[in-house]
Each structure stands twice: as structure tokens, then as C-alpha cells.
Length: 180
Image 1 (cartoon, rainbow, N blue to C red):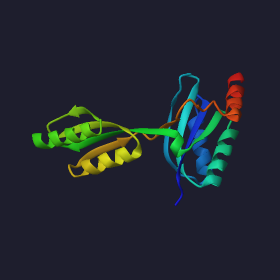
Image 2 (image 1 turned 90 degrees about the vertical axis):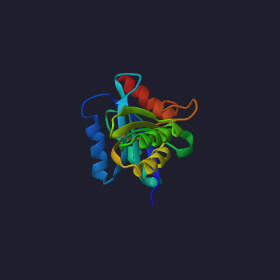
Image 3 (image 1 turned 60 degrees about the horizontal axis):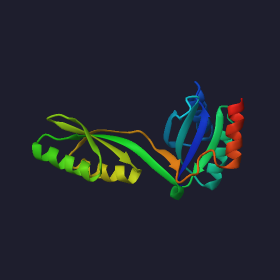
């Protein structure tokens, strides 16, 4: 089985960039497991976090192909032990009795999650964490009945002082992109 890999990609914040990136994956026949995109601290730059299953050769090929796209400024592979991965999950859980609501809230507290909506028939819980934390909470809430669930997809950053700009080749690409 192929391992889940993380690519962090800086691009120009412009219309059509998401389409170019997704077309690249589609043309190569690769499936994206998770994709998140948002502005960085610089409003002219977006950061993609792409989770994809593949071996070393495939991930290297994807990274090289991404680097060839004009709006791409930098590509970094985030290794499992050297990166922090997080996702946001919202659970709407069936809770028709006070006792059930109390149990659901206790579980949320154990996971350091927040109750963000309460009705007589349901609770909505917000959880931030890695995918194993989300999976564990989901399993516990399934016995109550999950009415709805939504995940944001993974975002990730390299641990420590290293950044996507640190590696010389990527920094040169980024500096070149800023000069254009």
C-alpha cells in the first residue's frame, strides 16, 4: 500500500491556480486525498497543503511537475516526523436526552473539543487535531448517531525554525517568483 505523503506548495494568489494544480493531478491519474488552500501572511501568495498516496518516485515526479507550473513559487515535501498536521472537524451528533448530551459533552472535553451548537435533538462539536484524533472521536460518536460530519482537510507546517523558504532551491524559486 502506498504511503500518505504531504506536499506544501506556495503559489501566486490568482484566479485559476487551483484549476491548474488539480488538472496536473488529473492528467497524471493521481488522486488527491486532501487539499486545503488559503492565503498566507502575504495576500499575494496562497499555500496549498496536498495529501496524496504514493511512493518516493511518484511524489518526486509530482513535486517536479508542480514546480513547472508558472504560478508555483515553491514546493516542499513535509516528512511525517518533521511536520505538524492538523484538520478541523465538525460533528453534529444526535442527542435527544439530557444524559446523552452530557455524555457527548464529556467526550468533547476529553478531546479538548468545543461545543458550538446545542439543540434539544443534537449537539455540534468542533475538533481540531491530527487525523487519528478525529478518527477516535468519530468512532465514539458513532454509537450516539452522527447526523452530519464535515472535515476541512489537512494543513501542515514543518516543525522547528525551518520553513518552506529555508531550502536553498525553494528559496531561490520563491525569490524569483517575488521578483516577477
